[in-house]
Image 1: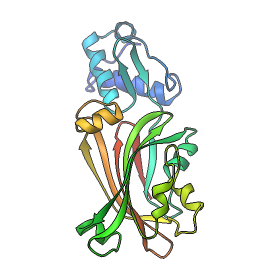
Image 2 (image 1 turned 90 degrees about the vertical axis):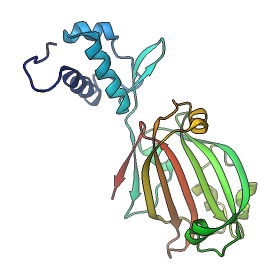
Image 3 (image 1 turned 135 degrees about the vertical axis):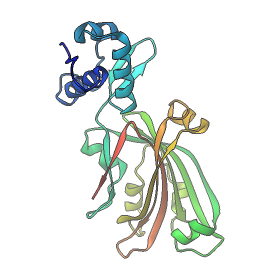
Image 4 (image 1 turned 180 degrees about the vertical axis):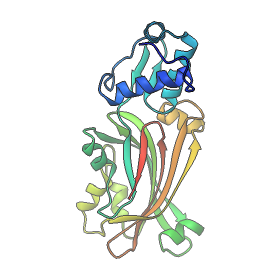
Length: 243
């Protein structure tokens, strides 16, 4: 394919657009290795520097992943997470099922802490009330993508401490107990952050990897807080749907 050299659009952007169209149109499939830099250079009749720039940009946008010594592979479509919903709250397990993928979890720790300041206010608890903190790594198709920390009022949700939460949906766990159920998320705050050394190790990504920080309060049908959730999500694998 020959690019339009007299176009105002830079050559690397034209390459990007064509590869992106190939991914979205099904020419390149998720998990498939795309042609090498030298092959693409010959295909588009441009320098390898131009091809490398296009690939790096597509990788930063989440379309491709470069694997050292193995080549460049097409990523699955980003999961689009709902953050302001009219309908019932959607769990990660349900979200993954919608996309034909499998959610999992690895528990990092369960502990009791004192709720102070903002956390106590979000959970409508008195200062110093006990809450149960659960830290997990959430996976999609076995790949770590989210660091999840949830805080539950200890008096009402003490059963969480004795539950096996590896590869489990907390929503499904709630359904097994006589307790208030999550209905929707309110007061959601989303911002861009970068992976620190701990997250880099936990999620197997580079230091400084772009991530979404999402903090919100999950409430029941009456609007009473059930838990506070803090998620650190790989930006290359997730997007958001604001409804």
